[in-house]
Length: 217
Image (cartoon, rainbow, N blue to C red; front, side, top):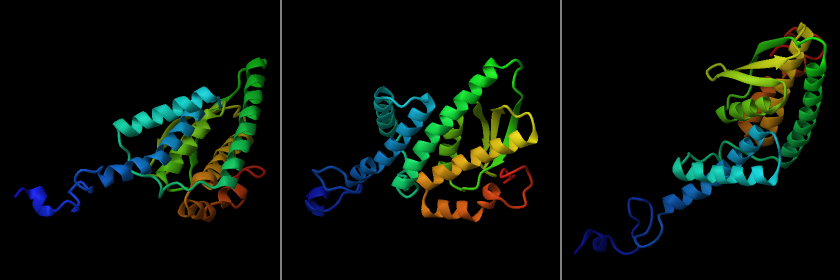
């Protein structure tokens, strides 16, 4: 009698499935990868900077290929879609893109080159996924670029244009933190939102210094 026969037709095999049927483990992996495909599609559209049917379809295709060739761990416990937060993030991100594009054109058509600076901004969410999503969103905004991210301290180094004075630099830091706030409240878990609320004083006020409503984190 073979080992398979001794085990019986209904006994799960080591791969987690039933002999003669599809492995349950693979089915779970495929189901868990759809949030990853969605996330990769969003990042793809943000990198291109244009929301179009072609970019969305290409992003879905890239996400599927990545998940098939390089199976990723499930992220359903790391992402929680919040409809109100997603809507707020989308609307505000489009407005920020328009405002930044107008500001960048003003710098280009100006009589003197703008002053640039590299700013270190300390993120508040401990999630690597939220840090990555925020860095992609910051890089997609015209006039700013993420040069490096220090994962251990959660510090993002951003190159910005129009940093003539301390007020402008504080405003640039504030805009990065405000973008992180929207990303976390759109896609973050409860733990991410709680960590954000615990350190939110760096954006809305406090004793961090700075000018106006823009304070150091």
